[in-house]
Length: 118
Length: 114
Figure (cartoon, rainbow over the protein chains, first blue to last red):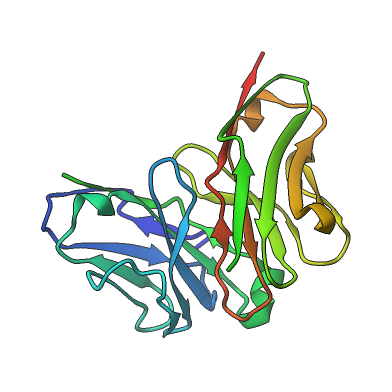
């Protein structure tokens, strides 16, 4: 596609419910990032994939958060037993570059999924 | 550890006035610095980036930023504000390590009045 597509755009979950957020990166983009943006804050790094390999998951806030990219394209961020503090916009970004070339190619961000936990 | 500090969570200017959004960074290695803009309900759009070439970086929509190592700053400027510039602006930093993610500031909301 022309851009990074995220679905759903909005998700309301009851506390304790599991949710799955989807990211369709630009075709051919090797690198994929997930970020969490709380209200009034800047995005915070969650995890990074290079193709299907999850190279960095240091930003995942708890073991309730899990991300996968099994075929090196579409990625899913799963949050188990959602809590109110999980309410945020979840942004996905992809890049044609990898490693040091990430900075040359840059990142393209999706519009995000706004998760509200009630 | 790397970090960025954006001074002023909200900046208001009149249309046609100078825009100055402040960003200071902290990094133990030569940084790569970025400015992104975010319009409501949209993703982040890159305005410009510094990657150790020229210290004065020109971006889209008439914005530019100057990397000042002595001041650890990367302030964003635009000579004349337009109503369409009203948005949230984020400064971000990373280093040259492979796969390193962007570290964002908390953002500055720019309001432009007529």
